[in-house]
Length: 196
Image (cartoon, rainbow, N blue to C red; front, top):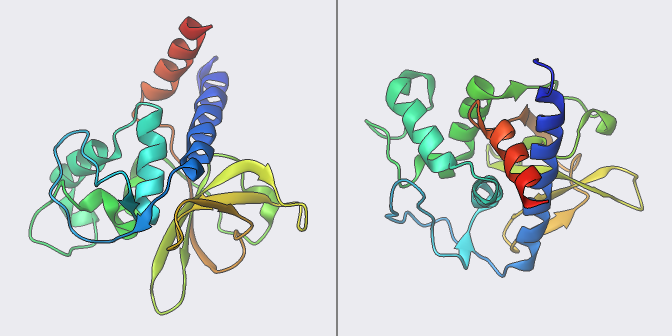
């Protein structure tokens, strides 16, 4: 890591968590329907979404378009991703937990899967198996549960965006950090300094 990268990453994570927490102010109906959306920068209607859309929208708020990043990586490395179709689809691929897991492991940092809550930091992405091979994803935020002392998770499990103490509620299948394309953390830091 270059000098300055650590502080840029800290600032990026801070802004990302702030964006995730802000998501809880939105009324979102859980709707996994396939929707044709513009590319790049496309999104399903703002009042609908699933767990992945919370992650996508938080990243988009800090200037990272996961729709574009995932689609571009899938075009170049399609065989690395779980296959549901014969070719990448910019309308849906970034909205699938399994694809995000592959993407974050390829382009971000894959961290230890553990039940030690202190190993999870604000901005980390966590995936779970809810049972019956039903995947889920959420983001660790900087708010701690009064009951457990653990950092809580911003996610949507069918009741809209919520912050809840669910880190250890299901089987954890992935733990990642992703600071965006190489220049995102630095760009985020520059934007923040200019805004001051």
